[in-house]
Every structure is written in structure tokens, then in C-alpha cells.
Length: 339
Ligand code: SF4
Picture 1 (cartoon, rainbow, N blue to C red):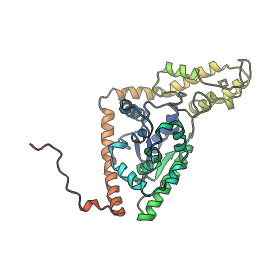
Picture 2 (cartoon, helix red, strand yellow):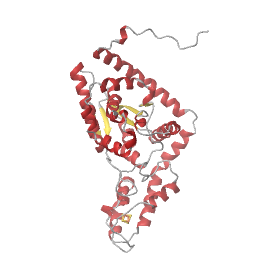
Picture 3 (cartoon, rainbow, N blue to C red):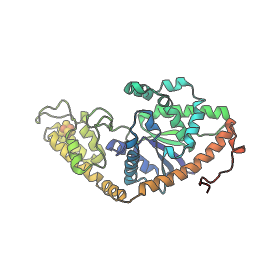
Picture 4 (cartoon, rainbow, N blue to C red):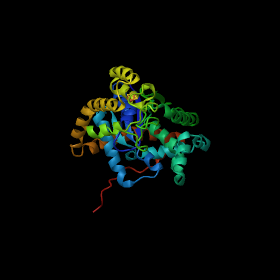
């Protein structure tokens, strides 16, 4: 039987190279041997200040990138978190068995509290509980994570373990699956590539925009003049080559150390490699974007398939915790207006 993978991503709009190399590429590969559920976690996006007008567009743009990159909505379930409301029900139940101390020690909570001191809200503290509900609702056994998220998943495993101890074996303990490229450094040369930090390159950018962005990248800080020998090992442009031209990377290292290539020329070459690699993606993206209503159809179908799993899990959970609502809930009635 195939293992079930769950992964959620906040709707951040158009995706960048860091998203692609660190997560999306892996999502695509996982489809070959797993049953995959990929979720746009829009409720999570509300734990920090948000603009309601941007949310829908961000979801659409992100899903467009996923589909263009090769996530196949026939093989995988692709949906939006809030379209399957059972997740909030499970989140509430998990919140009753999760000690506050576990949540207050989570590094990302402390970081977000520092970042948004005016908005240290209940939802932010409970973020890992909602994340656990996301995974457990679909009884996922594998969660692809970057190294920086391993601690979050460990907390999810603790919450699930506690539920199982209290109410009997219900949920599998999800296992982390480290991505092949754990971290992609941004154009500033030292921080993780991120839209918030503005050190990113959008996948859907035009070739010229991509070139211009790469030309702004920081390089070896010790190389001041064109004639100075460079240190490729401390240059992020060089590391980016490993993703797009691993073979040519050796020649770049040699030429850089011998000062026979300048940083501008080196970046121009990288831009060319990146644009070549992304050309099929960009073509496919434009083709999908032109199909009216396609993304919405994918999300609707995904929500229906996810809902079927979620409903079955919640019937079992409600029974186990003693909220046997199945016995008393009224039969479904038509929502049509009586004339
Ligand atoms: Fe980096 Fe290339 Fe400049 Fe060397 S030549 S420091 S690898 S950008």
C-alpha cells in the first residue's frame, strides 16, 4: 500500500526558486511512489496580519505554479485548507490535550512574536496544533520538511501520540522526509530565499526580469576587483550553479579562482542557465493560466476528495472522545429555499 504524504504551504502567491528547489520539485517526485495531498493552508495565513483582497489571488497564483511545475491533480489531491472545515474541528479537539508549555517553546512562535509584537494572538500560539490537525485529519504517514521544520513535526508527533494514548490508536505518527535541497540561499547571499526578505527570483518572472535579479546577487565579499582571485565556496552565485549546471560548476570554480571570469559574466551565464531550465515551466504556466476556471476546478475536485477522508476520520474521532454526534445529528436536509 502506498504511504500517504501530506504537505501544506501558506498562500504566498507566485512561487520563487527557493520554493521550487526546496519543496515543489520534491512534491512532484513524491507523486510517483506515494498518495499525495497538497494543501494551500489559507487559515494558517491568518495567524499573521493579512490582506483579504490578496488572499484569493495568492492561492490561485501558487496553485498555478504547482500545476505548471508538474503536480498532477489527477494523481494528487490539491485543495485549499478552509474548504474542508473538519480541520478546525480536529484543531479544537487537539487544543484540549496540548499543554501550553509545548507551544510556547516553539522557535517559530518566538520569532513571529518578535516580528509582529502587536499581533501575538491565540491562533499564532496554536499554529502547530492546527498543523497537526492538517496532517492527522488525512492520516498522513509522511511529511516532506526542510531541516528548519523538523522540530514542528516532532511536536505534531507528540500531540498525535498523546491523543492515541488517551483515546486509543487512531492516528499514525507522521515521519519527516527531508527534502533533497534543504535550503536555498537568497540573492543577499546569506539568508534563506524568501519573498518577505525580497531576496528571491520568481519562477514566473520573464527571462529579462530573471537576468536583472541575478545581476543584483551578492558574490564573494572578499573579491573586490575583477583581477582578484575569487573564493567560489563562499559565493552564493556559485552555489546556485549546482542546481542549474552542476557540470559547468567545476569550470566556474576554476575560472573564478584564477580570476579569468568576472562576477558580472558569471552571473550572466547563471541567468542563461536558469532561464533555459525554467522555459518549459513558463510555457506550461501560460497555457494553464489561459484555461478559464481550470485552477478553480482543480481546487473544487481536491476539496471533495479531501472532504471524504476528513469526514471518515472525524466520525471515528468524535466517537472516541465521547462526542457521539452521529447518534443524534439530524438527517441532511436540502439547503434550498422553501417556496
Ligand atoms: Fe562568485 Fe562567479 Fe564571482 Fe566567483 S566569479 S565570486 S563564483 S560570481
